[in-house]
Image (cartoon, rainbow, N blue to C red; front, side, top):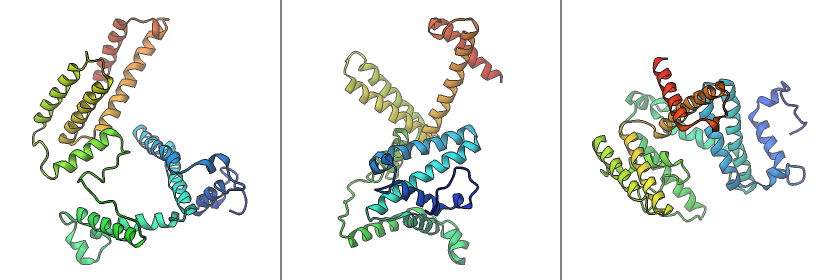
Length: 286
């Protein structure tokens, strides 16, 4: 990078992805870089990557396009950051990342980017799974060529990332198992399972064992995620909606109590529950 760029300078270089990569290179420069950035590695940056993805989703939920622009930039920076660290270690650079996703998108959409025959045929049944399988085989071959041992897959569930949010991972695990017939055909059967898991939670209330209680609550949440899947709902999205609803209704409680001159902690539970019911009624009328 030649000269420092003032923020919001209007300099056309600020719209150049290569300039962003150069900025990251400078931040990671061993002699003149940022001390904080130099201390980071893949594992310390990964939580920020996850957080930025959630902030993108939050901006979308709020319909804030200006915020979405900024959050997408933060998320893009995460890709640049990881690619820079990989380049330093001699693995790949950002151009390799761009090439990999470009090739993947073209390969997975032969009905769009293929020859006339492929475009005319449209999306063939099972094509997505076949293409992904071919990609995995190529990745394994590339690893073997580099002398890297391929970890043998021992389960249908092995490639479900363990770092996914819990409910999202639960749905992916259930979907994989369902493909080989390990699934219910009726959401009512899932509801029965939820009742069974709830009974098991209740049975552990007197055990005073947080380990057993956590296990049973986890089973209950897993079953609830399964119900959402059977209803073609996203459990993560459903709970975000519930969170937003709780925020609105609790804000109503705060506002109404403040009008009485009381502090929030001075209101009784009965008062707050009455205001909660009032907030629900107002939402139904709106």
